[in-house]
Each structure stands twice: as structure tokens, then as C-alpha cells.
Amino acid sequence: MLKRNLNIKLKSREEIDIMREAGRISALALKTAGEAIEPGISTKELDIIAQNCIESNGAKPSFLGVDGFPATACISVNEQLIHCIPSGEKIIKEGDIVSIDVGACINGFHGDNTRTFACGKISKVAKSLLEVTEKSLQIGIENAKISNHIGDIGHSIQNFVESFGFSVIKNYVGHGIGRSVHEAPSVPNYGKKFSGPVIENGLVIAIEPMVSIGSPELEALSESGWNVVTKDRSLCAHFEHTVAITEEGTFVLTLV
Ligand code: MG
Image (cartoon, rainbow, N blue to C red):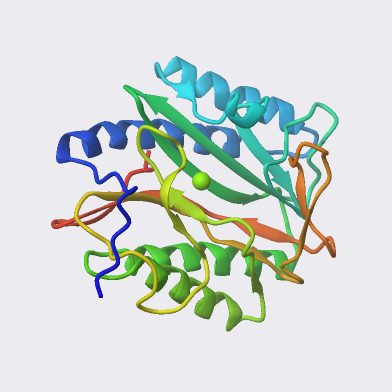
């Protein structure tokens, strides 16, 4: 039976064009902050760079104030996975891996993207983690096409990641995106083929594999649920793009 999720808001061609601009600014903020990573810089300084970039392009940071999040970007280092609040005390060192998750809103629509950057020379396993996670995002995007199921995306990501002995994080998932930064459907990075809603023309989703070299279990260090780290403190990575799925093909919107 065809499973339809009535909460999914499919986007028109015009709406996708606006989302392309939100995606472009999100990608520019990510690139600009990423290029500023160097030993000695704080995650707070990187956050200000991302915020300035978004605002100077006439957009607004998508995450600022969401559930009380106090910054523009989530910036997570090494064993930190997601939703880490930038801080003047968190100083980047040579050999760190730094995930920047940032979104921008313009004309009422959001973009959302993440990349894990290397600061200088990183360990062999960290390099492999980054390569596998980035490639798993590409594989997920290849499976995001009309008539496939949402579960096909996660299935392909999980299979690829686990073939390297790494773990897919299950507690956090990708999502629909549009006038809200988080919309239906959920887009897990694991699952079974042919499961979940069928992908239709005009679906816009953020696909965001998160991968750990150790256990996928997590722990939030802040009482309000921010600053999520891997429980065994193993390295983790996170890559994300916002993509539009249409009859003409699947398009990554978060491109500079
Ligand atoms: Mg996201």
C-alpha cells in the first residue's frame, strides 16, 4: 500500500527557487566559517563569522532561538556530535575535527547544512571517518529520488557506513525543511528498503548522516539537552545538505 504522510509540505518550483537562495547563503556561511578554522580560534569566533555572513547576505540565522538555542551555528569538536553551543572557551587545536551545522532563512524559507572540517593534520582514522561520512551523504542523495521511499535513503547510508566498521547515529535524523527548519518527514540514517513515505515531486529534505568510530550511544552534557557527545567519547562526524527532489532530478540546494 502507498504510505502517504499528510504532514509533508511539498514545494512548488517557485518555492524551491527561494530555497535555493536560502541554501546558497547557508552554504556560504558554512564555507566562510570553515575556512576560518585554525589552531587557537574559538568556536564562538567561528559562530560570529557565520552570523556575519548570513546577516550581510540579508538572511537570518535559522537556529538562533530555536528551543532557546543561543547561537547561529552548532559547532562540535571531536567527540562532540551535535547541538554544541559555541563558546569563547572552546579553542580549536591542530588535529581536531570540527563540525559546523548552520542554516539561513530568507524570504520565509530555510536552508540547512553541515560539514566536518579538519584542523591541520588529523589522524588516519579521523580522515577515514570524514571521507566515509561525506561519501555516505552522497550515497543518500543518490537514493533520494521520486518513487523511492524515505527508508531507501537511510538504508543506503547505513549499509555503506557499517561496511567500514563505523556506527550510524540513530538518535538524530534528517528532516523535511521549508518554512520551518524542521518539517515532516523524518529522514533516518538507517532503515529498511521500501520503508517510510514514498518520495514525491517537490519534496525538500535535509539529509544528514552522523557517524561515530565507536559506539553510537550519546549523552547530552547540558541540562537543557545541548552539547551532545558520544558516550564513549569516540570521534564522530556529520555532513548535511538540503536537497530538492523533483521530476527533473534531485538538486542539492546548499551550494555556494
Ligand atoms: Mg538539519
